[in-house]
Structure formats: C-alpha cells, structure tokens
Length: 258
Image 1 (cartoon, helix red, strand yellow):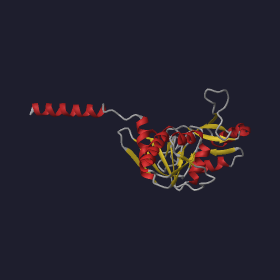
Image 2: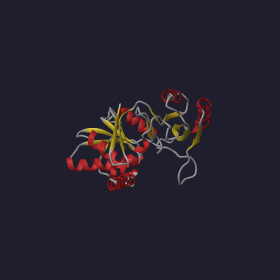
Image 3: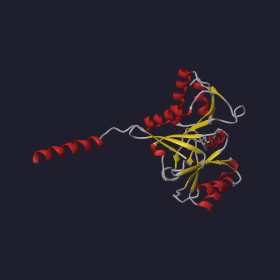
Image 4: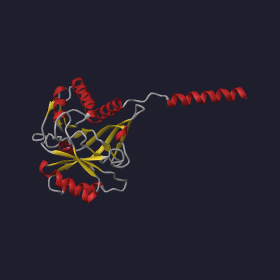
C-alpha cells in the first residue's frame, strides 16, 4: 500500500510538472492561427474583401495569397491603410477601391482590444479612420487577434482610446474631453521623426488614457465625442464586429460571435 501511494504521488507530480512546463504558443504564432482560421472560414470565390492593418493581418494576407494561388480564387481586396495597400500588392493580390466597390462581402481586421460583445478599441497603428470606413461598408466585420486582446470590457487591458482629430483643433478637443469625461489625452508623437504622428489622412491622433468599467457607456461616450467639432473619428468600434477569432496560448482558436 505504501509503495502504491508513493508511485501515485510520483505520477501526479510528474503530470503537474508537465502541465506547468508545457511550452506555450508565442503571441506571433497565436496571431497566425487566428488570422488563418478567419481566412479559411470567410473567404470564398468572387468576393470583395476588406483588408485590415497591423501585424496580425500580415498572416491573414499570406494565407489569402496562398489560397488565391492554389484555388484560383477571384478576390478583390480593399485596403484600410497605406500599409494594407502595399501588403496586398506585395502578395500579388487584386487591389480594389471603394469608389468601384462600395459594398464589401466581408472585412477582416485586427483590434487592440475586444470586449464580450465584440466592441473594439482600434487605432493603435494609426489607421482607425480608414479601418472604420471599410468596416462600415462590409456586410460582416471579422476580428482576428491573439488571446491578450480578449477582454470583459473596453479599457480593461488596453488603457488608451485613439481619437483622430483635425490638427487645428487638437488642444480644444483635448480640453473638452478631459472636462467631460476625465482621463488624460496626449498628442501621439511620431517615431523617428520630429513632431506629431500624422495619419494617412493628414490628421493628428490624441491618445485618450481612460479607465472604464463593465458599466461604462462607451456607445454614449463615443457619440458625444463625435459631436465635438474637429473630431474626425474615434477608435471605438461599437456594434460593428460580428465574429472574432483569438489565437490561444495552447494552440487552439477561440471563436466568439454576436
């Protein structure tokens, strides 16, 4: 009996050690499996597809290009940024524009954070306006991300909300939002350049450092901010996404939809 208990105890220790030390998938690998799953599930022949911006989308476009080559698919790709445009061209895909394709079958994009109702914060890469325009033209917006972007409520993990503004109005807008809602707005500065970050549309970005809660009315806040003269758009994507794919640390893909 003593020997049996000792063997059982040793086995449980080994199993516990194995679970604790089991290698976890890197965030880049998690991004890849989420993006590839979305492309496989939502891309079919003869569709117009919105291509988002950011690091996760790179893996999706690579998978899309592979499928186009192997399956001879006819896909028109609508970019959400300068980066997305060149990603499409570099992978030999067909570049389209909203002037000729005002209605998209689906748009696939990343997010900085996504809550349980699939409301999102986007714009960490500075492309929020074009991303929102393309998303609004799509019958379905699909989010792809790694598991760190999956939150219960907005600002739980990602503590800033990007707001694209007219350069002439950034100081009044900053003052107005801080007065209405609190928090701290900071002008986003450029990387490897002197001065502010300038978007593809020639605007500035204010990063609003704001901590909400599960009861914060982000829809109402978004509507009120959008009424301030000089605000071009916000990084709050409320009620736009229909499904999200999260690459998990264990190599699985979590799918959520509303």
